View 1: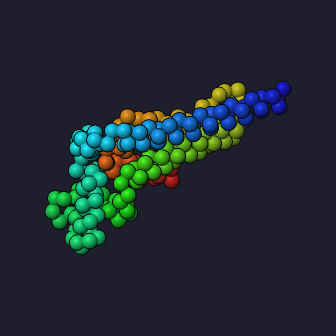
View 2: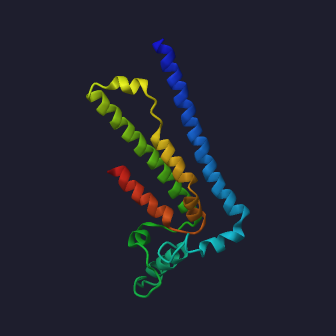
Length: 180
C-alpha cells in the first residue's frame, strides 16, 4: 500500500509540473499574440499612464541610455530621464525581449521561492515530530500558484507589452526576495 501511495504522489507531482509549464508557456505565447496581432494598439498602450509613466517608460530609458553612452551627458541633468540608475548601468536595451525574459525569470524565481518555503515548512514539521501531518495533508505548490498568478496578472501582461520597465524592476525585487 505504501508503494501505491508513492506512485500516486509521483504521478500527481509530474502532472502538476507538466500543467505549470503548459500554463507558463501559454502566458508567454499570449504576450506574443498581443504584440503581433495588435501592433497598432501597443503605441496607444505605451502612452497610457496606467501602464507606462515617465519613470517606467522604455522610450525614456532608451533616451537616457543614449545620453549616457553616446553623448556622454548625464541623463539626470535635465528632465529627460527619471528612472533608476541601476537600469541605465545594467540594462542593454533589447526592446520587448527584455520584458519577456524579465517576466518569465521573475515567475521562475517566484516558483523557486515557493519551493524553498515548502521545504523549510517540511523541515520544521519534521523537527517538531509532526511529519505525520505532512504525510496526510495535501500541500499545494504555492510557488507554482504564485508564478502563474504573476504571469497571468492583467497588469503584468499590460506592462510587459506596453513598453514599460516595470517587469525588469519587478524581477529585481523578486530576485532580492529570492536571495533573502
